[in-house]
Image 1 (tube, rainbow, N blue to C red):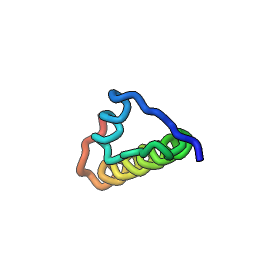
Image 2 (image 1 turned 180 degrees about the vertical axis):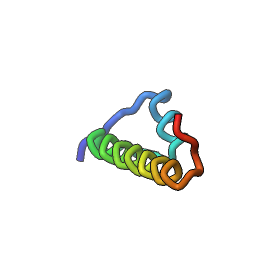
Image 3 (image 1 turned 90 degrees about the vertical axis):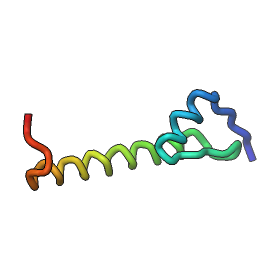
Image 4 (image 1 turned 30 degrees about the horizontal axis):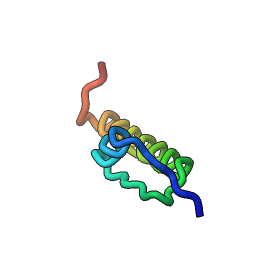
Length: 57
């Protein structure tokens, strides 16, 4: 099994979003998770905007 080394600044930024890769977590998996999280947050914001919780600019 391969070991992956993440820079401390990257680990800190990921941790702020609840992502905590280990030495054996492939970067591709981290990328996929962050992309999914991004889409989820966008959908949540869009839902709030459509329902009047966030005014349109």
